Length: 447
View 1: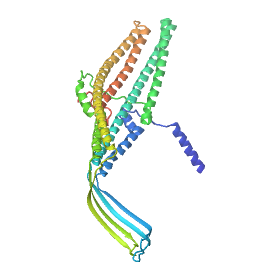
View 2: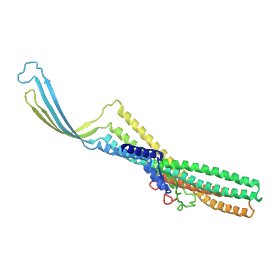
View 3: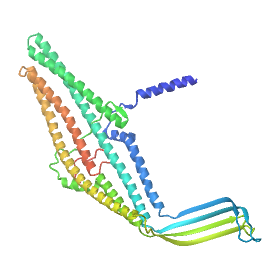
View 4: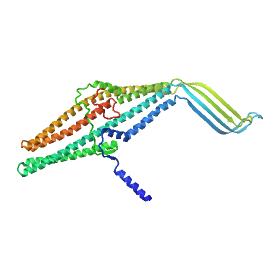
């Protein structure tokens, strides 16, 4: 029975090795692909763990401001020998006794700029951890969207290449039959066969491109897909005119995730200056202590119990630390200056990214609108070429050229649609609004 179970487990393990990813039968949408990647990607899990770890910095900083309670206890066996210069009869020379002590001490900081700055740094560190998680989520969403749109484009290209191969094969068969009865010349047959073979090569290339794109998408989502649902563009404005990039730049300067993170890091550096200054200032703390000491024997040949109580305020201030305090202050000032310039550079880059995203989206929208018209025109031209060939007004070469232009237009339309969707996502990411739903409900909206 045990051997049979081992065999079954071995078979299941082998199947798991052969099928590392789940296979989805239904078409996969862009939203579903993003959701799968966010749940599957190890990078997201690492970012979430980092966010949770950074969140503890707030509690750690707060702990330095709250009362500190310490309990202590000790139990000792002691031997004590005393030699007097003159003989003594009242006091014992040799002691062998037990000693135990127990106490509780409470310390409450009253003024400590160093600890307060550390608490503020903890709060900012938790905020930075959340922003880093959002940045990783945004990066992953764009990566998955790019992989999904590449696979969707490859799927459309394969469909167009398959249709082109089928049409070229049918025309080649017609020309071959026409040559046999003397209504077509050999050059026309050779041209048709060459176009058919080229169409087959293009179809094989498109199939390989689709397999590569699916593999990349599967590595992100954790599941293979046989078919992708193309993103709908019904809400897209075909002609937005020339949008003004300035509002998008202003929004990016204040809302871009990279700018927010740089601002938080600048705040951490500023608190670092206060923390370094606090290391050179006096520290004031209140304390209270209860203590009990018990000795089983003394030189008076009697046990002793001592109870001690103390309440007070303690002030401490460093006078000399080898120059370390002033060096730390200079270092923190330079770090704050570095963070300030980094923030300014991130704002500049955010503005540039937003402007480029607006221009890219504008160009992509124009190309998509033009390709929609091109598909209609190329389709009508192909139909006219076929009808002209049927009545002897068009050659087979003209028909093949018209078909190729029609199929190429359909392929390019899918590529233009994918470019437009990705341009919109990049624009939303540039202003920090790419979260949750990867495809905004309304395209082309102004800030």
